[in-house]
Image 1: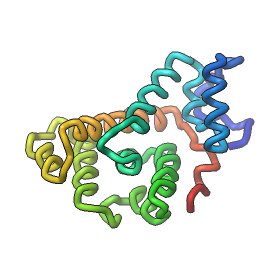
Image 2: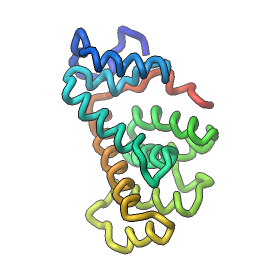
Image 3: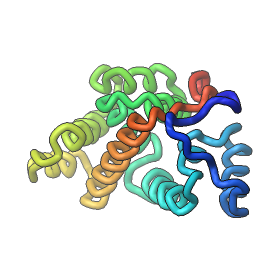
Image 4: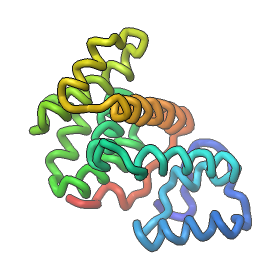
Length: 190
């Protein structure tokens, strides 16, 4: 994204200068990713909000879990597809392409997870994420048992629910503020 383009439709400039710890985090992103994700820049108008967002993201997406990093990204893309979130589909579609080594899988999940060549376990996980996204009040013990029947522990079910909830929140914020993905995401891992 060019420097003169806003990352959202809101006029919320980043704190300037950034606190040393935030600048260090952004430098690590730049070094590892080749960019600072626009979502981080969008939250950087309020360092406390940025820290809360990144703490939750890092815990849900990077911490130890019975779910692989790829499976968590698959949930992010499936939820974002249902919600039609341009930012998250672009960013997390790139992550699925990278983690799977399969550009087609990333595109299939962006469009319709049902056409993707995934395991029955993963399909059950994504069906659960879809139901949480569309009708969470209709989740029953049968839905949770279906996950258990595919080898998910109760802790895994907690993680699936929380990753799904996080992306539902993130999708709504990104869409409501017209958050734009970094241009770099579009060509990554194709």
